[in-house]
Amino acid sequence: MATTTARPAALDGSEDGRGLLTRDDRARLYRYMLLMRATEERALTLYRQGKVPGSYYDGHGQEAVSVGSAYALGPRDRACVLHRDLGAHLIRGVRPGRVLAQMMGRATGITGGRDGNMHFGDRHLGCVGMVSMLPDMALVACGLGLAFQIRREPRVAMTWFGEGSTANGVWHEAMNVAGIRRLPVVFVLENNQFAYSTPNDHEFAVDPVERAAGYGFPGIKVDGNDVEAVFSAAAAACERARTGGGPTLIECDTMRMHGHGAHDDMRYVPPELLEHWAARDPVEAYEARLAAAGIDTAAIQADVRAELERDTEWALQQPMPDPPTATDGVFAEVAEPLGDGEAPWSRWSPDREATHA
Image (cartoon, rainbow, N blue to C red):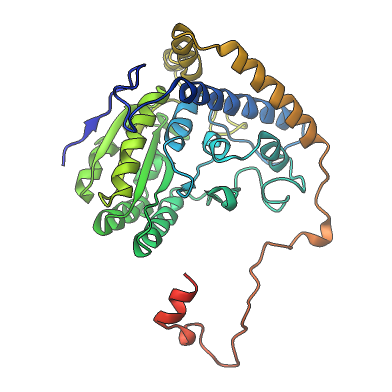
């Protein structure tokens, strides 16, 4: 099965996998990329002020990947989001204020202050809470895809991961089961050139996108800094998955412009490489493209700034969680306790499984 390279969408939408990106769609794509960058910059400021505990991880320079791919999802699809893909959360309807409250451990954050600044997801909006051991979310996406398949639901699970994940056995297991079962999963590989401090040429001898063929499904390589190219590939992959065609691996070439985390000075990255990618900044490039097409990017910028100021003020006013309630909602309640000596699997039956699916 051949590996292909997706072409960027033409401004009139002629290369768009979904059929047509309207001017409103393009304005939204730009707005989400801008909102992701602005929210993460504000979170980084709060981190440096001591208001965000732990470390901090962002996706500066990778905005086109999560925004372009998540924009292709339908309302009933599910997103298994990575820690550099805030754009997917925003597209699904998570407000910047709730993200900032989450980062600061506030009671009104996405997990109610029960978890840190990486592990969060609003399941009511279709975002699955992240497992930070990469790429374990690929297996979670396969489980979702299998459930959709068994129920004969035309739904898609999308998962994101870095290229370093492709050296992990879990990734191969996920790819293998997805290929065997033809699961409706879209794998989005964010090749940001470094697995922490390890460059691509020390990570693999063959481009990871080529591996998809070995598992029986297409691998597509796109410019990860072109939001429309990412969208086109993701829209086509979602349609393929939704109609029974099975999974797709999309490799997005991009660059992590900040350190692995806020603690990382990334001195291992050659300055000329950063200069090369800075000249291809996805937000700036798309802004120029839309401005040339007559879209009022300045108005979108002003709207994003106003929204972020309102949401930041709201987040800073939110209370910390009440310590006595710290375990509320953390552990599942057992509705039917097992009897003495009864094995957990002894109550299983096909009918029971169907009831609880």
